[in-house]
Image (cartoon, rainbow, N blue to C red; front, side):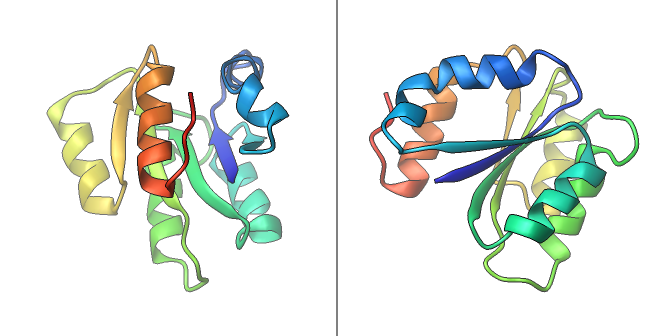
Length: 129
């Protein structure tokens, strides 16, 4: 399963690679990374049909995660990947906006990787541990 992680924090790539090390090694997960919404759109244009999930931060320079979500959900290409938003601000306004724009879920930072793996496994009939 290809997952695109979109976050402008420098240590996010290493963190995700460490937390999904077993799933990557077993070939269950293939992680791709972008540092902002514009980079993510480029990755999606090149690999869109293969990417099944986008995990995106909300607050990023350039194109925000909410703008990225809007573009993904209104794109006329199929299949559209699921999108889970990740934010340090889990307030009701952000939750409502993410839901209205079509996000499957909103997770708060610091990220609970066990909960994330459960969401991914549940949605895709996988057994990620």
